[in-house]
Amino acid sequence: MHKLRDASSEAEADLRAQIERIVDKGKVYVLGLGNTDRADDGAGVVVAERLKKRFPYYSFSEHDGVEGTVLDISEKAKGSTVLFVDAGNIDMPPGTIMVVEKEDIKDTEITTHRVQVALMASLLEKNGVRTAIICVQPGRIDFRGELSEPVSRAISTLNRILSSIMADLDQDNPSIRALGKSL
Image 1 (cartoon, one colour):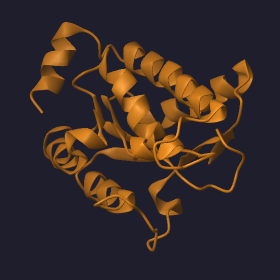
Image 2: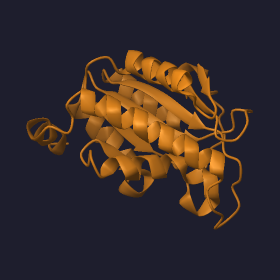
Image 3: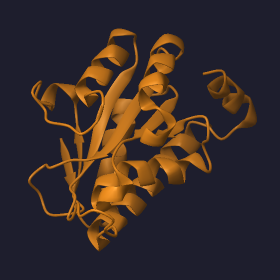
Image 4: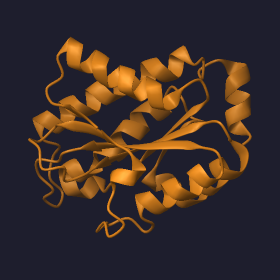
């Protein structure tokens, strides 16, 4: 696990290194989960939507039908990595980022998602796809509320790190995009 709050450049570099160890060399898919009507609970969706501008075939949000995307990736993208990004109560200050392995999620997790993240991760892993969950500690989840400042900073940090990793893997290359488009 890795905890990051108000990222210094060193902490941001550590988080990037941890994610790179999980990712290895294959394609990276980002699946953003959450509810944008509930302020900070939408952090994962915001991350994915921002990444989608540069990586449209590798970034998906809950609005895109994550369950179908997970099935497609599990069938066609062996050797890839799926990073789920979601707000999660990790008992840390708002805006803290933590990378959580599937094994660290309780089987009894209470979720607002139609399908539990641990279940989706298990399906992917059984089909040769690596997974990790990147959690952002929400500060507020009031209905129709605005993102809190710490979570906004965490979203920017994640966008910088994930965009850089995906670019380093040449996922914005047109020929690589064609492969991702086939999903």
